[in-house]
Image 1 (cartoon, rainbow, N blue to C red):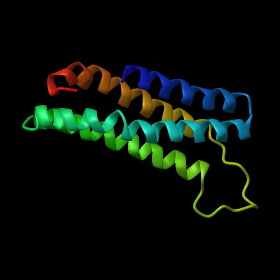
Image 2: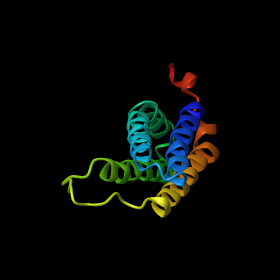
Image 3: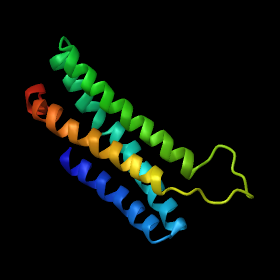
Image 4: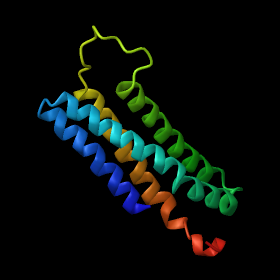
Length: 132
């Protein structure tokens, strides 16, 4: 999962770098790629990770809360990115959104969520114990 986390961070950094250079089209392309990568991550490896920890630590409310909170944060981030990349009602007269501050907030959320997972939850993940 650490490799998946590194890939998510790198994909998001590409969008931030493009924003800093004022390359709006590239920002949107990189955000689209990041969103797809994040959506794939939420299915695989996140689902087996989630299921394993729920099975192993189902009675530990603090760990379950941390796990569900991390997953919810990542799903929210994905929805927010998707709303920017693929607006529900595209308006041809609308100017491109200014994303500098939004990207900073998203980066902080991604960084915090992945760091918490790596610090608090990944050390507990031993899929070989589950026969995987």
